[in-house]
Every structure is written in C-alpha cells, then in structure tokens.
Image (cartoon, rainbow, N blue to C red; front, side):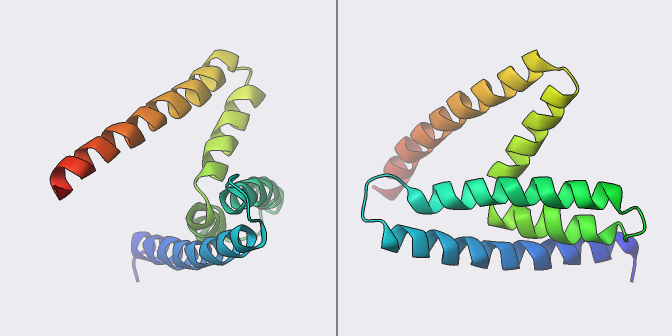
Amino acid sequence: MPEHVTRYLLVGLGGGLGSMLRYMVGGYASSRMNARFPYGTFLVNCTGCFLIGLVVAVLAERTDLSPNWRYLIPIGFIGGYTTFSSFELETFRSVENGEMLIAGLYVSLSVVIGFIGVWLGMIAGKHVAS
C-alpha cells in the first residue's frame, strides 16, 4: 500500500476513535454537571491539550518509533478528540520560538473570526432553512 494511503487511513482511524471518545467524555461530563457552563467541551479541550503535549513530546524523544504514530495519535486520534489541542500546540510553538506577536494574533484572530464565522453561519443557516 502506498505510504500516503497508509497515512490517510491512520488519520481516519485515529480521528474516528477520537471523535467517539469526545462524544462519550463530553456527554458524560455534561450529564453530571447540570449547569450552563459547557463542562463537557471544556473537559475535552483541557484533556486534549494535555494529551497532545504528552504525545508530541514522547514522539519527539523516541526517535526509534515509526513516523506513522504521528499520523495515528496526535493528528488522527487527538485531532478527532479536539482540534482545540492543535490550536494550543501551534500557539505554544509560536511562544516557544519567541514569536509572541504571531501567537497573540493567532489566538485573538481565531477567537474573534471564529465567533464571527459562527454568527454568520447561523444567519445563513436560518435563511437557507426558511
């Protein structure tokens, strides 16, 4: 099987499993906390950030491991579990490289433009549905 096909399969497999775990963890946390705060998503985002940091550090140190683990776990599984962890890892890398302006812009623009995107999407969706 060609290597690029293997990578897509690993990302898909990991992503599917990560998405199922996100659904389970998020739903469990939300059902336990009867509050307005989105505890399920918060828990998934925070645990995903820890996991991506742990896995990326281990994969960087353990050079004897196949590069395919990178496609299966951080890109596929953790990416399916939460893309917020990827966002935080990229922000961390910018800070680590001393690119504070880039990190600040990335965080600020992601939150503001993302919010505007959701708002405009909701407006468009209401128009399409009516």
